[in-house]
Amino acid sequence: MEGLRNKETQDRLMRICAWCTLPIPPGADTFGFGAQANQSLNLEDQARKFVSIKLTLSNKTTIAFVLPEGSPAKESGYDLFFIACSQDCAEQLKEAFELELDVYNGSDVNHDKP
Ligand SMILES: [Zn+2]
Image (cartoon, rainbow, N blue to C red):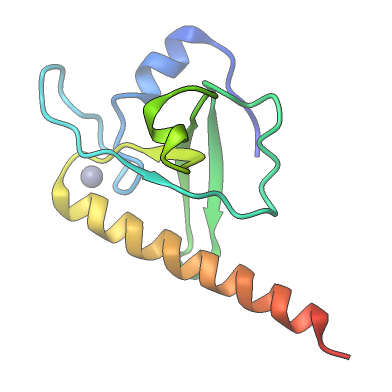
């Protein structure tokens, strides 16, 4: 996971679908949604940056915007924001991400076993 500092890069990433990676044309609607980060993700000092997140089960790497303190989505309990080009991509990404979180959570449970 690597924070991307360059402002132009950030602007570009704002217009790329996090699921299908196609560029979103200027003026087109985007379908973003907030998500809670797993504890295994270190988001310290990553606020307002994009981070890449590996979705092992989907064999995909996706990008997410790290929400800064004080933003409305952050106040709602979200850490990350995904940007998608369509409702369909947003749904698929959401499902893949949640599935991935379940696996992480599952492995945490296993660690607690004797
Ligand atoms: Zn898409």
